[in-house]
Amino acid sequence: MDATHPLNNTVNPAPAKLGEALSVSGVIHAYAGAPAVDDVSFEVPAGGVAAILGPSGCGKSTMLRIISGLVVPSAGKIRLGGRDVTGVPARDRRIGMVFQNYALFPHMTVRENVGYGLSGLSRAEKREAVDKLLALVQLEKFADRLPRQMSGGQQQRVAVARALAPRPTLLLLDEPFAALDRALRADMQFEFLRLQRELGITTILVTHDQEEAQAVADSLIVMNVGKVEQMGSPSELYDRPKTLFVNNFVGQASVLSAQVVAESDSASTLRLATGNDIHLPRRSGFMRGANVVLVVRPEHVVLHASPVAGSLPARRMMAVPQGPLRLHDLVLADGTLLKATERRAPGTPEAPAADDVHITFALDHCRLYPAP
Ligand SMILES: Nc1ncnc2c1ncn2[C@@H]1O[C@H](COP(=O)(O)OP(=O)(O)OP(=O)(O)O)[C@@H](O)[C@H]1O
Ligand SMILES: [Mg+2]
Image (tube, rainbow, N blue to C red; front, side, top):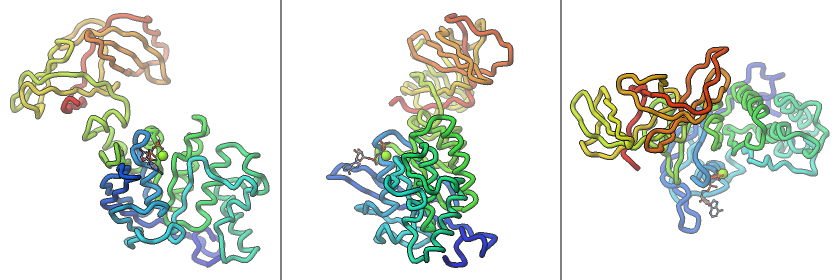
């Protein structure tokens, strides 16, 4: 093992960061004429963690396969650390990949699985390298077990150690935590972040779980039918989604149909499908008569026991406590479903099963889009 190996911290006590910047530009790929990835561009800085997020079939795994070199795109470029690697075979890209099902070799022990990609080392060097990797993922005691003798979370850590062995500059993870229960998943996300920060490996994680994406990534790439809808920090996408799709996909949101009935430089009026008018203290940006949707996050719905100025009547179907919050399922007069959350002080009495309430919106935070 060479002295500059970042995992070899007996020789190199302050390990250099492994990660390299990734640049994807104008990538297109079609399977038998059907586009799966359609003109995708994004950048991930060295050492950054990006999550690709989107519904089933939107092209996430295809994008990872293209980055890793398993699939050659019909157009576009992949650059790693500034080098064009588009034509470089997968095995020469120094990219580690963890597949959704971990894809461990079932007949090999943990030690053999992790050491599989280590070449050009003596037996002793290989043993030492594998020991370090196992220590890193805290599986020293499991070296001689077979994958089937381990839990899902432990197997996942073996897969991560195996992917790290050839010293990748980029780590690709395809739904790595999907098979785990909620508690174990949270542990693994935390563990993984610790490891990632320690090694500084640029990482791309595919998930369709938006909470997971927000928990582990410093930037989110939201894909929809082969295209990038929006990329940005988790809070940017949550607070300022550019499209209805992103608004609905990142975080929870309720969608209210409306028409713009008045528009001036400083105010606008929306008529909801319920017949109620909502006065926005700003331009809507739409023409009078335009059909729009008003999108409201649960924390931007305010509940009142009796009518207040500008309030809408709603029927509360259900209210359930969730830790410090209470979640309400509401129905408006036209049948539109609306979710609301409010802070729940300890000892707050539970709400009755079904009752009538009145709601207003924190209008500064509600967003408008053209009706789909
Ligand atoms: N080998 C293949 N041959 C033909 N079509 C494919 C192939 N692999 C994927 N596709 C199609 O390409 C599109 C994108 O697939 P991809 O696997 O990238 O989606 P995904 O976003 O990873 O979805 P999921 O969340 O379900 O894993 C889908 O319509 C899929 O059916
Ligand atoms: Mg997939």
